[in-house]
Length: 149
Image 1 (cartoon, rainbow, N blue to C red):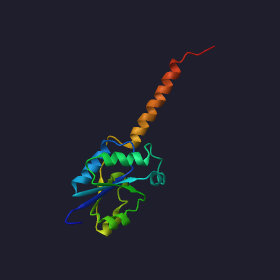
Image 2: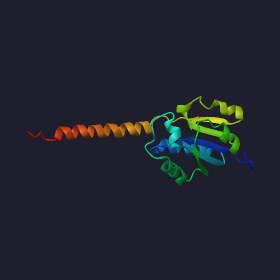
Image 3: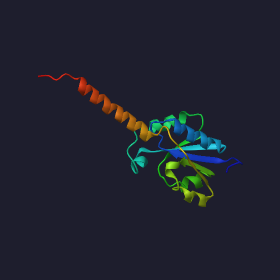
Image 4: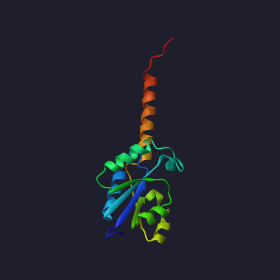
């Protein structure tokens, strides 16, 4: 807390920005007075999954363009202990696909919220849909292509 204001931090890759990303950021905003959003660098993301489709600087600018965050910062690590101490974070919001991984923040006095994405948009599903659509287009083109003798 700073000047009687609750500080909330949320973070993510935010690749192929979609509705559930927006819902989580808006939820985080509703929990406090100041919202800080961390955007994972390409190097951080590649340490635990495939490289993002959208480069870091572009993902950062997309989040900065939203009216909801007060501050947008790069995220270089999945360990949030240091950022919590430096920025006096009161609450942390992350997608429920990370459920249980941030319980250690409670020892630092931080309330941890695992936002339920539920069904619907996810970057993984969007990428799969694009890939499947591309594969189907290729199959259709092969069927329609005349065979030269």
